[in-house]
Image (cartoon, one colour):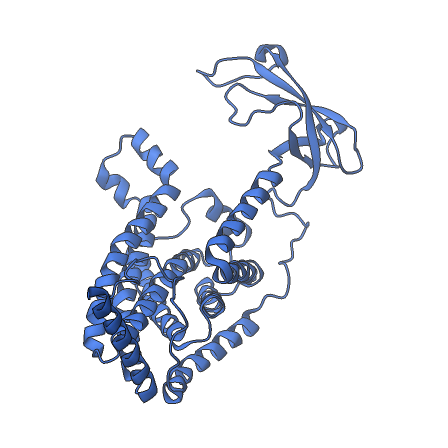
Length: 425
């Protein structure tokens, strides 16, 4: 029984290079993918943003455009809230805190100021803690500096290093290539997708072009320029088209505006030209892309290995075997996708629980309905990618009529059989 690739998450475990396909089959695959790649490249060139959008006064109102400096908390003392004229909400117990903060960068290095921390504040300070402060040069001197955040560079960078080392240690060269692909995806997202949307380009079109570029770069970079990778690309592309169609249809049918939180409301207020519903659909496409890559690469790799294990098996036999692997993959990945969205929306679900709303009211409100549509549309595309990719892979690998490949496969199968008989003796 051949089961070494039956694990649903094993798309980095190829046991040696795939047998090369015939030149004719490579030409057929190239005839499909080359025009697609040219179209994506053309889209990148046409929609590429020319720089940051202009603002009349140079300030967006988001808060990150203020001048920031580094500072350190030097002392924290407790004081009664009433002594400093601070009112706290009912139920909050305990004294207020006076944090003395010293500016350590910028034109006023060495200046100190006081930051009041109420007993109901979620962020607390301690002596020696590094913080980030905002500088407002037009404000009165005593109000020019205020703490906006704590400095967390060291733990975040250390966590990223641990992650990178773990990926390379386990994945070796594949892990290193995966990290390069991750950097490439982030670059496309920050240098093309986000600026292009801010420049007024259609969010859905930008997401399709940018997502396709991410797919092409990461898949071929991590898995090589092989026929099996090309089949995975085709399966991912078909599934993305399905997600785009279903998402567009149900967003319109359910009358979802996409303007359901403070972030989207602020974006719409600052850039009224951005189509918020298109932004919602673009988010669904990009969010589904990573999971789709996992499924399509795994299914394609499994089909190729099944064919190498039994070179004379028909495409239908291989398809059925691949689908048995795919069903396990569907069961695990769909659950993962739903739980990921539920985890992201956990504060929202807690608010509805506190309000003691009935299930119908919660489920059909726009806040939750948006997450339901996002989850279910992505899951439908994910489920559809398994039979689509498995069928494509089975047809492609079975259409390859290279005699030497069949002969080599037969020799491998025969050698395996002889070793098995010797062990039995």
